[in-house]
Image 1 (cartoon, helix red, strand yellow):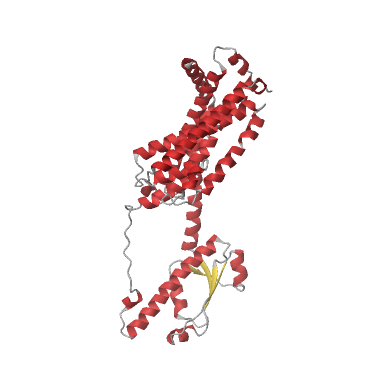
Image 2 (tube, rainbow, N blue to C red):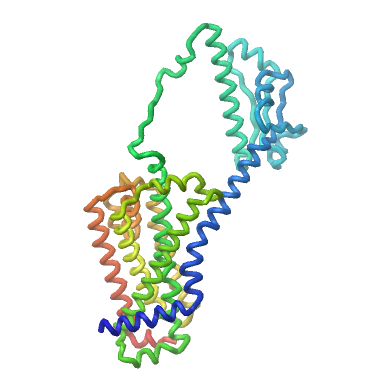
Length: 397
């Protein structure tokens, strides 16, 4: 029986790799998609921020030529734009924000009374919000200068403004804590996505694809029984799904190393995240089991379908089913996950991945999640076996 299963497995792998779509959609697209997407996003965000920082278009109303007005004018990359209707121009994006300094500003500063200035900005505009942050920093710097002058006039040490100095010491070295936080948020999501989508095209091709090509009936006439045929197809689908997951991880790693990526600056810290070899092995085991679950379900739905279109309709909702528990764990802290999450399908695997990335080996969590996912695998395989055993399903055209 095992030799028959291996023969079917080898035949299916040859057929899958003979089709260029397997290589393109299973390996190249996951490998290139993340560097491309995150690279474009990073370039767009960086360009937008630089355009604001290098050309801060503001309208400044300062009738008394105040010290604050001069302080703002002396800042780098300030581009003063005259406007007859500042509110409308901010709304239209012609200027990023408008500043109104009262006529008696310097007198109020000298009298040591709190002075209000008016800033008009657009909170629906990324450029305007960035400009507001820059101006806030400028105003803080000016305020510190004024306060220091007042204290010096009174011969008071400026250190009284900061009576407590916080010395920070992280339990994680360098930037590895930030790297682990990024990975714990992104990696489980990506791995679950490709556990669903990785085996999908292969499952459809080896199920309903056999029906449409008319090769399923001749295969049934060979000495390979339906159970051997099921296991051979199932193992081939699992291999393709795991390869797709590995390719997506490599693509994510490449995108983190790109200087233009949205992760720019995190790439060096990713390499310091220090995910151990045992953690990687356990992650690989769980992802393989997840791929087996979805691969068996997709093969079952595929063999039941009459056409490629119908199979795609049946398998597409699996993505939604997987995303709901995955997003439910997206913002969970790996070090404070409630025990009941480890009994929720898919969510438990995401939580385990978060813990492993953070270097946490919680044996009860590992055991209960492993037990549950074995149940999922067995149920999905039994369901696939049930579908393959039904004549009305196999010959449903």
